Length: 212
View 1 (cartoon, helix red, strand yellow):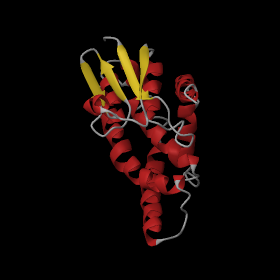
View 2 (tube, rainbow, N blue to C red):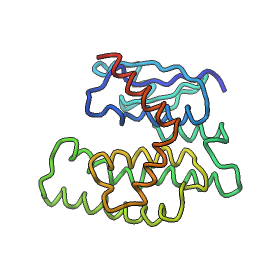
View 3 (tube, rainbow, N blue to C red):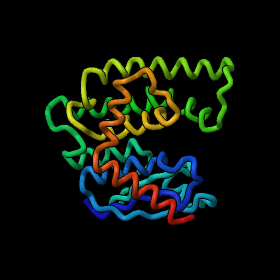
View 4 (tube, one colour):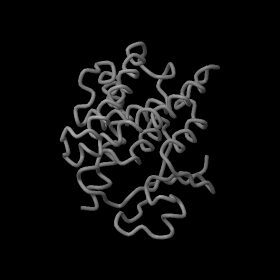
């Protein structure tokens, strides 16, 4: 694998720190023991070079030689196909990890992110729209709770699927959304107790703190 370069913002406001999605990539790189250089792009002035790598002006993206990959799920999948520690090697494991990677994005984060945006804004009014989002998220968590009550990790052993799913659930947990879902809470605790997460999280916070 060529030299890896992870690009994220040079600074973000205090509120989203700890949840910017470069953390997912940092975590995977730590789990795999892959060295990586971190570079920055301006948070406030997103130029043409930024949009060439990330068409929506977001972060992160990963440069692997001549390949530039955006979207955290795609980056995790790319890394998972290159390091066995990030992807199961038994006949069923890779397929299970990939399906749960997509489920984290399409089934769980799709329900959790709109809810989280309301929580970030401090909007807890019981409007019909807000109540619909509450019900949507609770339904998804109820189904996931049944899965996580039966296993420690989604694809038999820890994989990129767990990095993504645990990070999605961390944001829900930040606002108390995992209350009443002990299996989901236990899963997040197991994942975030891993040394690789602790190192990635500390580096992530230090990166933004250095720009203050």
